[in-house]
Amino acid sequence: VSISHACMHTYIHTSPPIALPFFLLSRLSHAPYYAPPVCFLRLQVAGATGVTATVVFTTKNAWPATGYLVMTFPSGFTLPSTPTLTSGTGLSSDTLTSAVSGQQLTVTRSGSGSSIAAGTSVTFTVAGLTNPTVSGTTGTFPTFKTVRSGGLSIDEASSLYNSGVRPSGVTIY
Image 1 (cartoon, rainbow, N blue to C red):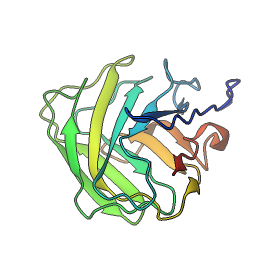
Image 2: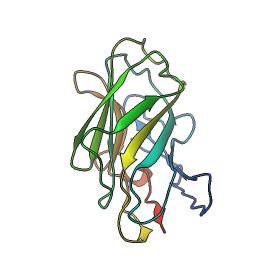
Image 3: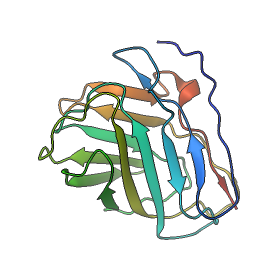
Image 4: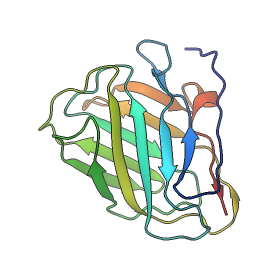
């Protein structure tokens, strides 16, 4: 799998939140998503608690109703044992559940909705995060992928697949 796009990120120290663009790749089609996924942190203050992140991406391949998403946060972030998830665009008929293991957040679709078609914009929020306690740029996000219920990755950017296009770090002030 290869990609010719460069990984780019922009830091904006303002409110509303900053945007952190990044590309994700599809292991099945060997091509990037239609639009770069974005993660918005509502607060970038070192040590801030109760931070909400909004995740926005466009699927390259269909994402089944019983599938899930795995997103690993860089070290320094603290994830609550049960973060509050809110469905947004593309997930309106879904109930989302979460599981946390260390820095890894798994977001599971309930199966009550339908398969999300390729090219669909998907949005959801994750609330209850704690920012790193030290100012500066965090590490990269090591994993971001959509997965079928049986464990097969659909669209993925990880240390195993195209590590140069994973989500970049974010600046904490």
